[in-house]
Structure formats: structure tokens, C-alpha cells
Length: 235
Ligand code: ITT
Image 1: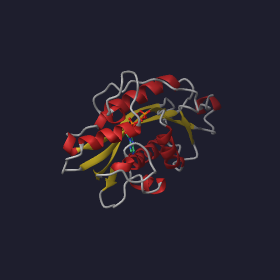
Image 2: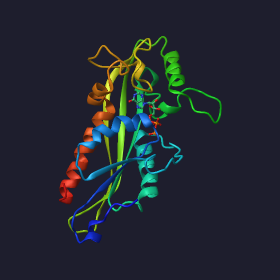
Image 3: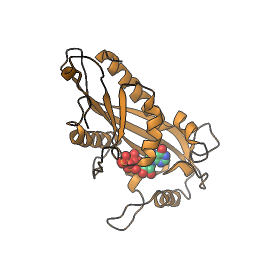
């Protein structure tokens, strides 16, 4: 698959920019796609599955920023020869609970202890969190998403411009004492955003996509992409 290089087509459109969502998590792709579609008809969205990729990337960094950048870099190196212009978007999200000194944080996907070589399910992680929080009076928590953007965009001088930056979205709330709701994924049944009396699992995807940590990070990422396209003179 290749997307036409304007330099190879005498500077004439069609010009497309591949946006590669660097996640193997289908729930995240499902949430991200509708949010990104509106930016520009020039952007063509691909998930890793669309590109036939399922890289094993060990999230070995100690921060959400570090892991997001690591995933974006690895995926960029895997796909950069397939597209002339591209932006790889990688998000890393953590639930940060005050009573647990910010845990599970960067370990949110791998929070519950499980036998070596296996991965905890969403249910395992939620159960582990609720066990640790049994007696906690301070139930304040927040979700934080960092999106790393790594790519190569056209530039007015024709040389192309390297993109390597991050944006962040966060939402404050609290951990409920019981699981509530059947929607969403991950820790959604026990996270109640400030100002709402419903958990993320009780409000539909549409409402979650308006207010969530990921939505706020995606809004910042889309604004940044828009301004980078403006600077490239191609939006
Ligand atoms: P990738 O690394 O492949 O993108 P992941 O499942 O590891 O997928 P994250 O590292 O971003 O995703 O998120 C870590 C965990 O945090 C995830 O497995 C969920 O349990 C939880 N999580 C992330 N986003 C969430 C959300 O919007 N609502 C509830 N839980 C979420």
C-alpha cells in the first residue's frame, strides 16, 4: 500500500496523509475513529489490524509519556516506508488513584497479579482495584491519556517536516464502591467523573467521547494536526 507523494506527482494533488492508530486495543480504535474522521478529507485512517500488523511492544517505560512515545516510535519505524506522509498516533492511558499514590497509573493494563506469562483481564484489574480500595475514604482518581504523535508531513520547502510531540487529556472523578453499568471497557464501571452521578460504563459511548480523558487528548491532537496541516499549506 502506498499513498502518492506530491513530489512524485509534480506537486499536484491528490495528497493523502496516513494516520496510523498504534494500538492493538479494538476498544480504543472504536473510540478514536469517529473523533479523528472529521479533521480533513486528506487524512486516511488505518488501525494496526488494517495494516496486518500486531507488534508486541513491551511498555517498559515508567511514565505514560514514555510508553506513548515508545509505541509511536516502534510503529513509525514499521510503517514509514509504506507511506510518504504519515502521522502515527499512540496513546497510553492510566487510571491514577490518590489513595494508592497514583497507582495503577502506567501499570493500569497489568495491575492485578496473575500467573507468569498471562495478562489480567479488565475484570481482574477492576476486582484488584476494588479490593485495595475496600476501606479507602479518599476515592479521588483521574484518568490521564497521553497521545504521542510521530510522523512526517509535507512542508512548503518540499523537504518534509518531522513530527515528534505529545499532548495530554485528563478527567477527574472518583472510584465508586460498587461496579455500575455495562458499557465502556476497562475501569469504566468503577469510575465516576466529577459532576456526574453515573460511571463511564453507564453513560453511552457518545457522551464518553465528549468528556473523557481520551476525547480531551484527541481534541488537542486534532487541533495540533490541523495547525500542522495549516503550516504545511495543505489543509
Ligand atoms: P494498547 O497499549 O495496545 O494501546 P492497552 O489496553 O494497553 O492498549 P492503555 O495502556 O492505554 O491500553 O490502557 C491501560 C489500561 O487502562 C487498559 O487496559 C484499560 O484497563 C484501562 N483504560 C484505558 N483507557 C480506559 C478508558 O477509557 N476507560 C476505562 N479504562 C481504560
